[in-house]
Amino acid sequence: MTISKDILTTLKAYHFDNPEATWDALRERLIDIAESCLTMAHGDSSLVAYEMINDEHHEALREASAKMPLSINQQRAVGKALEIVEAAQERLKGRPGKLVGIVEDLKAEVCSTSVALSPSLSVLPSEPLTFKALSALYLDEHKEHAGEGTHRDVKSSCKTIAEILGDLDLKTHTREDMKNLRAKLLEDRKPLTVAKI
Image 1 (tube, rainbow, N blue to C red):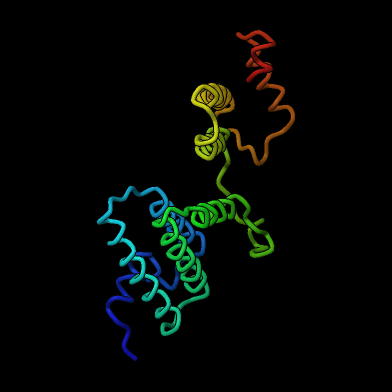
Image 2 (image 1 turned 90 degrees about the vertical axis):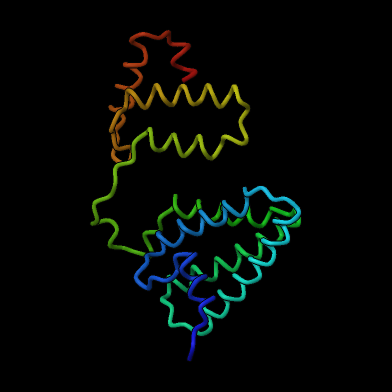
């Protein structure tokens, strides 16, 4: 069985050429690809070019799934990539809804790690979740929906809280930590200002 160079090149472009790749790593790449397809600006000539490129990628991905010995994670990623390519074609026609939905679903999956998929996660050391990191995700997610003034105010409040909480892991914080935060905020602010933060 011969696997065409086009298939191998496409798999490499999507980072699907590593059978040891984890679903998390593949999903991150899928998010990058989907966001790029969603946000890229096009002129008339690039619209036509990208329709052709997407068709070629779709064909190569389908053939890879059918002909190659891909791992479960690779097959899952190829399936999602096919959805992205199909939705990207819709976006090129001015219909971005499906692509937006795919990006949101992939990002939501990052936030909701399923213990059912891997019961051993509870014994693995996990990265601390700081307020700074969490607020950055929140701000990025809501920047399009909030007005400029609101976004600026929320960003300022988040920065203030992040400076006080520092490296505190929010996954293990206590009520006492929150009381200390409030007390620190009240040191040089009026209660009404603290309530707004």
